[in-house]
Each structure stands twice: as structure tokens, then as C-alpha cells.
Image (cartoon, helix red, strand yellow):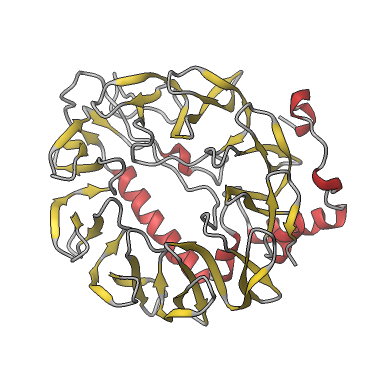
Amino acid sequence: MDTGEIDERLRVREPCGQNSPPSDEAASSDRLLRRTNTTRKRVSVPRHRSGRRVAVLASFVVIVVAALAVGAFEALRFSGGDQHALVVGDEPMTATKASGLYPVRIDDKWGYIDSTGSVRVEPRFDSAYGFFEGFGLVSMGSDFGYVDMSGALVIQPQFGYACDFSGGMAVVANLDQGGNPGASGYIDHSGSLVIPMQYEYALQFSEGLAVVGAAGGGSSFIDKTGRTVLGSYDLAWGFSEGLAYVEEGSRRGFIDTNGDWVVELEAAVVDMSSFLSSVAPFPGSSTGFSEGLMALQSTSGTSHPAMGRADKGYIDKTGAWVIGPRFDHACNFSEGLAAVGVRENGLLRWGYIDKTGAWVIQPQFEYTCHFSEGMAVVGFTENDYMKFGYIDRTGALVIPIRYWQAGDFSGGIAQVVEWSDAYSGHPTYIDKSGCVIWQGR
């Protein structure tokens, strides 16, 4: 669908009297896109200033995806004879939480602004990321550390690899000669290494526990002292709403924090289609429950269903179907709505359903994302490239389709990438009316 064919109700004026990017900016961005083989996958702008961290994260994702794709998940679900597959996907672009500070790039350095666009932390970092639990991840040279809300370095740059804080802990690691993370561990808010760097990989803490991988294989759950409390499993993902997906031998399903099996799946294969954003843009999903429901793929009749079949639906925490499998793609619920994709005349279109499975926003978009602060990113193809804007909960396009990338709203503002930003690497921030509160420069 070309943006010229968008329903009339989606046509709104340009925000704050702004005009479309001039043709020379579009041409420059087009050349940049072709030169770098940039795909349609949307990533957070600041991360381009730290290529090594991006490469590390990408390598880890590839390893996990490959492991998931190879395994055939076959186990009996106690609640019935239906079969399912987990639906997973890439995260949407987002650089900030509602912390009150947002990373910006001025010339070649990064600092922070507040929600009014005023500079609160002068740019002096080589990269800067959003605040989590009062700490902002920054880099100076090749090392990562953390700043507080005043911009003071409270944990000195010393780690070759570091993540945002979650549950009072952050994953850190040093890099080997190839630029890949070595053994991983955890620091606390003081910067102390409270769990040694001893794991093949380490995921963020969620609901008091974190998944770690042993060098010899297998995944376990540890507590904040580093004590192994659950596992080892062949594969494990973090807890979400009291349940975590695990694989153990022939068993596949969800356990509670005591390690008891709550939902067992008869047969499951990972639906990889949400990872194929280099081919077509898909919104993110995950292997966890959200607002009491979990997107699964029915595999009744075959243990290896084709990608994109109309067989995705939602189960509750008992394993019972709440919304029967009838969608081509299904993503997590957020603010009472979930993005789902269906094929119409051979074309995949996205819309939103409520928890009864009823359409709230009819399928019409080429890309959708979850709702955040009452707004969701949607996209259409324009001149062979995907561009993005924002809808409200009625489905009305309130910020026009104009951005190269677009992130979630947080604290009333969102980070976007205009054509000129894509060339320069400087993010812009807008408010919910579409007015620019910080222009990338």
C-alpha cells in the first residue's frame, strides 16, 4: 500500500506547520541506506555510536535465534490435545523510559535533555542511553559506565559490555580480542561486582530471578546473591507475570517461581517470522505473558507449521485458549490491545484486537507496534521504504507518516529519526501533538 492510498480518516495536517523533508535530504538518506545495506529493522539511534556494543548484542541475538530455530519443541500439555508454538520477535525502537531525561547527540558527543528540550547534562559522552532505575548507561572511549540524573559519573567507565539496570542489577562483561563479551556477571547500584563474571551469558533480572548460561550448556535461574535456585534447563527465558518459559528434555512450557510446571505444551516450534524484519517489518513479541495472556501458535496436525499461517491466538495462565488461533501473526497485549496481522488478498495487514478477540482497529497498516501512553507506531511503505507515524487508540493517525524510525512515547515525548537524522545520526524528539521539542543537530 502506498501512503497515497491511506484511508481519508488517516489524513491529518503536518505537525506544527512542518513540511516533508526536502528532496536532497531524502536522496542523501537513500544513498546512505543503499551504501550501508540498512534494513527496515528499527533500532535505537544512540546505539549507532557504539558499534561494538551493537555487534555484541546482535551476535547474542543470532545465537539465541539459531538455537531456538534448531530445536523442535515436543511435550504434552496437560490441559488438552491442542498444540502450540511460541511467538517471539525483535524489540521495537526505544531509547528511554519515563525518567525525565533523554539522550541527545550534539556534534560528536552525547548528553541529556529534559521533556521540554532543555539540555540538563552537557554532551561529553561517546554514547548515552536511557535511564533505568535512576542510572543512565554511557560510554567514554571503549568502556561503559553509569551516570546519575545530574550527569555525574557514579559508576566509572570500566566495562567493555554493559546493560541497563533491572531489578537493582545490571549485566556486565569484558570483551575478548575479537570484540565479543567474555564471561558475564552482575553489578549492583554501587557498581560492585556482586555476582562474578562466570557465565557464558546472562539475562536481566526479572521478578527477582535471572537466567544465566553455563559454559558447558544449559540455562539456570539465579537469585541476586548468585545462588542457583532453578534449573538446569535446556533453554529458559525470564519470568513475566509469575511464569517463565523453559525446555527440559521432552517437556516444554511454563513454570512458576517454585519450579513447578503450570502449563505444558504438547508441541511447539518457535515462530521465527517476527525476526524477519530484514525482509518485512514485523512488530515485536516475546516469550512471556502480558496482561494475563500469551500469544501462541497452534501446531495441530503438524509439528513444523509454515510461517505466517493463520494459526496464532492467545492462551491464559491455565493454558486454555482465550482467543482462538486464527491470526497470521500475534503480539503481546499492551494497554488492553494487541497488534495482530492477517492476510488480505495475499497482503499482510496489521490491526488491533481487544481481549475478547474483537477488532478495535481494523487491519490496514503495513507495520504496527504496541501501545505506549495511548499511542502506537504504525508504518506504510513509501517509495520502497518504510516510514512511520503514530495512531491513537481509535486508530486515527495523529502524527503523520514521515519518520525513518519512531520510538515509543515515554514521559510524553518520543524519539524519532527523520530523513536528515538518518544521515547525521542525531535523534529528534517530538511531543504527542507532533511538535518538535528537540531537533537533531
